[in-house]
Image (cartoon, rainbow, N blue to C red; front, side, top):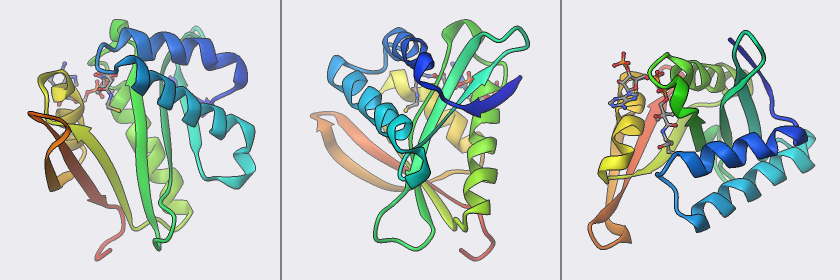
Length: 161
Ligand SMILES: CC(C)(COP(=O)(O)OP(=O)(O)OC[C@H]1O[C@@H](n2cnc3c(N)ncnc32)[C@H](O)[C@@H]1OP(=O)(O)O)[C@@H](O)C(=O)NCCC(=O)NCCS
């Protein structure tokens, strides 16, 4: 498996994975695509970073998008991570997370935050974060809609950070 920066011609694959995921509604898909556009437009700014995973025959199997949180010292947000359903549970999500962690540590990151939903479709995502050492640091009840809470995970990527 290879991880490299996302390119403009990958947008259709990103779109396919977001629609296939079933976790995102149409509005969320549009926001996710907007974030990808921003990452592709001005990669040198580093506000949004997008990388994708390709398997050994070059097929697109997933992507991750993250960036520094403005007005913080060394805090990053994981905005989106999606893996092709056909390749789930093969460690690709974990590899993308580890790649992001190595990348942001080199930029001086202390902490990585990730918001997710409390609902059943997000169970794989919550389990992935927990497996990789992210812990729940906040719960905003009924945030997305009634009965759908925002769960905030965080990982300290530097000791004592
Ligand atoms: C969450 C997601 C990225 C995980 O990708 P993945 O490549 O399957 O993840 P991995 O193979 O690295 O799995 C690592 C761990 O995550 C957890 N996990 C992954 N899929 C799971 C599932 N369907 N059910 C329960 N736990 C799951 C497990 O702890 C797993 O470890 P294990 O296989 O040793 O038990 C993928 O399921 C996905 O794209 N989901 C839809 C989009 C989404 O919800 N994104 C996050 C919100 S932005």
